[in-house]
Structure formats: C-alpha cells, structure tokens
Amino acid sequence: MRGYRKQKKHRIALLTVIFALIVFCIIAATMAIVWGIGFVLVQTGLWTLSGRGSGSLPFVLLIFALASIGVGTILAVTLGRLPFRPLGRLLYGLQQLTEGDYSARLPEEKKFGRELSRRFNLLAEELQNTEMLRSDFVNSFSHEFKTPIVSIQGFAQLLSRGGLSEKQTREYLEIIEEESRRLAAMATNVLNYSKIENQKILTGISRFNLSEQIRTCILLLEKKWSRKELELSLEFQEYEVTANEEMLKQVWINLLDNAVKFTPEKGKIEVSIQKDDRGLLVRVGNSGPEISPEEQKRIFQKFYQSDSSHAKEGTGLGLTIARRIAELHGGTIAVESGEGRTVFTVRLPQPVSTL
Image (cartoon, rainbow, N blue to C red; front, side, top):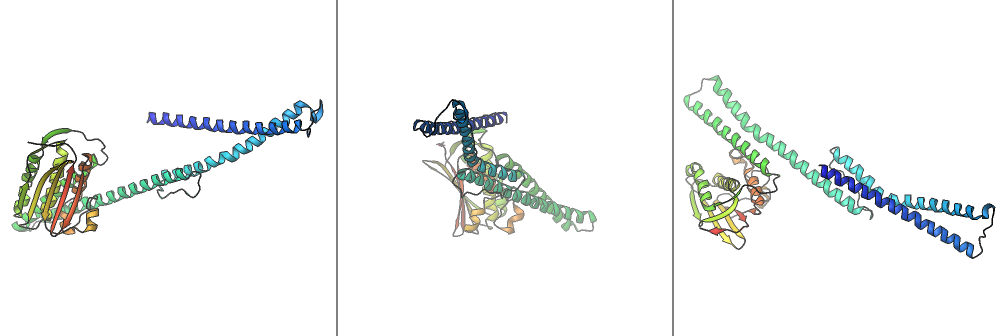
C-alpha cells in the first residue's frame, strides 16, 4: 500500500511538472511571436520608438510583456481544458463507482480522451460483472445451505413429538444423517473453493503416482458405486506427476462422484489416462443422460446443477472446484456429451514419467 501511494505521488508530481512545462512553453512561444511582430513593425517603420511617452522603449517592452502574458495565459487555459475535461469526467465516474453505481460509463465519441474513457468503461464493466457474480453467489449459497437445515429441523421436530413407528424413526434419522452429511460436504466445498478462488500461485507441489491416486479415489467411493451395481473400466499405466497432491485428489473425487450420481443402475464408468507430447489427458466418462450444449456452457458455474432431480445429492460446486484446480496447474477441463455417454477430460500440461 505504501509503495502504491508513493508511486501515485510520483505520478502526480510528474504530471504537475509536465503541465508547468507546457504552460511555460506556450507563454514563451507567445512572447516570441509578439516580440517578433513588434520587431517587424519597428524595422518596417510602422512603429517608431521615441524617448518619452507611449513610444518609449520601457513602455513598449511593458506592452509586449503584458500582451505575451495575456495571450499565453488564454492559450494555456484553452489548451489546458482539453486534457482536464476527460479527467473531470473520469473523477465523476470514479465517484459513481465508489458509491456502488457500477453502471457508470463514460462517453467515447470524442477523440481526445477516448482511450481513457474506453479503459474506464472496461473497468466499470468488470466491476459490474464481479458484483453480479458476488450477488449470485450469496443468493445461491443462502438457498443451498437453507434447504438441508430446514429438512433437518423438520424431521427433528417430528421425532421430538414421538408416536412414530420404529420404521419411521429409523427412516427420519437416516434422512437427518444424510442431510447432515450433505451440509458438511457443502461447507467443505465452499471452504475449498474460497481458498482457491483467488489463488494465483500453486503451492504444496510434490511428485507422486497419479495412477495410484485415482485408484484410491475410486475405492473411497466404492460404497456409492457398488450400491448401484456399476461397472468400472480402468485403462491406464502407472504415471508420476509433479503437482499439488491434495488438490488433484479433490478433482478426481468430484469427477468420479459426479459420474456415479448421474450413471443409472448397472451402468458403466470409464477412467483412462493417456500421454501425449503436451502432458496427460485424464478422462472420466459415464453412461447415462446426455448434457445439452446449453448446459455444457454453464456446467462449471458456481452452484449450477444440470439435473434438478439430483440437486439434493450435490452442492453445485464440485465441477467449479475441479476446473479451478486444473487451471492452477496450467491445465484445462472440458466436457463432451452425446450418444448416451458423457466424458470429462482433464489436461495436465507438464512433463510426466511412466513407472
């Protein structure tokens, strides 16, 4: 902050010096022109100098000096208003932004100051988009957290009243447990996302066996995919990568959990790793309902869930987190869907080695 303030002071001082030099040059040029005209008038005899009165040399010099200063001042003020007009509009626009009016825009029709206006408008548009995302995040966050809390509260009240059969009691307790797990998972995802959303530099890097990590993630979800009697197909050799191990583990957990959720009973999930000249391609595919092109454009947005029938099973942050982690590793994540099959592809553009 101190460095920024110091830099700002230097810029203001530099602008002041530049403006002072411009004014000096204008007045000097004006004086040269006025004196030049006077010299020509004297040389041509149109104006004669005398020893006294209005024709005396001191009087003429005074007239020339006053004329030079007057004309120079008028020119300086006139020309000086050109750069200060857009600066005035800029200050007014900045005041609107500080007051929360992100719809403020500056006109770009005038040639002078057009670039300044264009850059301000880009900044205002970016701030407006950020504010919209923040508002959407808060609204979605509140809704997503409220739903399981209301569910837990409702079933807890039913249990407290008593008079339920053993089967109903067990069923309600299972719902409360499931909603509690969902709430905990949601809180974990939100915390994870808050950590990586604005992260710029990847830390905690180590070298590890990627293939073994993916197999471990599959085993962690065994209860879920075995309950639906899903078929798993693994196609990869042993690969080592240099990355953040915990972050990449979260990517595979999220993608695999998403695949299990949307694969129908006795369906198939396929996991493969391929190596090319640009790094690794990790693919997680599943049979089941296709994702429309419109949904594919939104599927990585915060809290977006493509199928409302599965909304209670997720938090809407899993794919968002996966994409952000892939980006932090210099990679990408993409989705393809068609012919009863959906595939998520993660590219990790780094040197890899086969064990």
